[in-house]
Amino acid sequence: MVKLLNRYKIFLGLATINALLYLSSSGAGARSLEIELDNLETIAVVLPPIFILLWLLDIWIPKKTVTKWLGNRSGVVGISLAFLLGSASAGPL
Image (cartoon, rainbow, N blue to C red):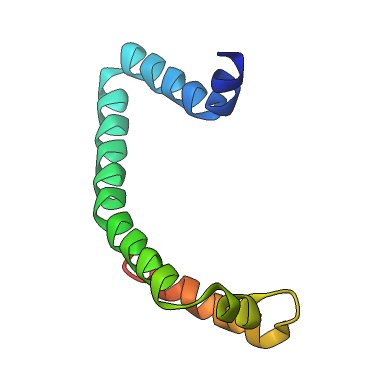
């Protein structure tokens, strides 16, 4: 139980601060909750397609090829490729 609480300590701390903010100043707390829900909606729309694309990438491209292009000895080409692939997956944000 302690391990689980330790894992989520930042989330629980922010949730506690948000609850105290809502109780002390309902206007600021309501605005904070509105922003959080908007962010959650954005994440819920963006993440599933990224996970699907990563799953397809895992199926279509063999691990050996990924290790060759993005592994320890890939150098500048690997860094550039990782940057481009990461930018493409986060592009809709």
